[in-house]
Image 1: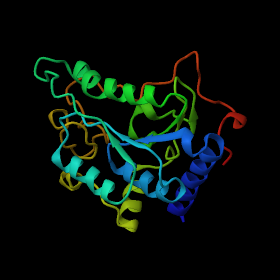
Image 2: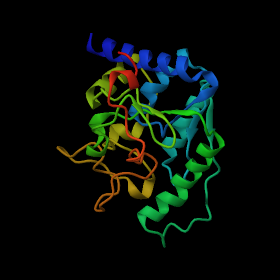
Image 3: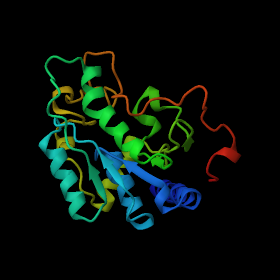
Image 4: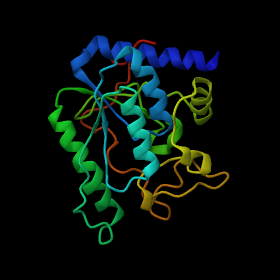
Length: 227
């Protein structure tokens, strides 16, 4: 019953977004994490041609790229960039590497789709920085977060119940997966994203920057999807 409610909530937000922005006014991004594959399962019937951006950093685990290819084979409209192999990983800080390999290519994709609204698979459970996200956020690009109420158990229960393809590295202790050099397994009791950029004061690559203070998140029912 709980999963059914959450699933209906996601579908309702997606249908609301489609009614507001139209089929040509939306796109999604994913790195094919657990949240991402759950959202893709909801998107496939409501927006089967939705553009889905994947940033190939040139440093992903092979399992991540293989999973991407499986979803392409399923018919999803996955759009990948060409990885920037010329970027010198060894002589870059983590922030510089993320900026060059991920944020800049993604920004190029965003600029090419200016005016469209961005659908994400973010949830509040994932990190303190994501704990206050809204269903609809206003920033330079409007952002819709239909999965904000899901927790990690919900996500994995849905994956198993619906037999979704997911990254096999999750079965080896990687709860959140990014680029191979900056991703480690999490230990018992650690937060879900503790294995990302371990030992650094860094929790985000930079793509999901918080909304600008000049363009605040919606705070009223009138500004957010009606649920």
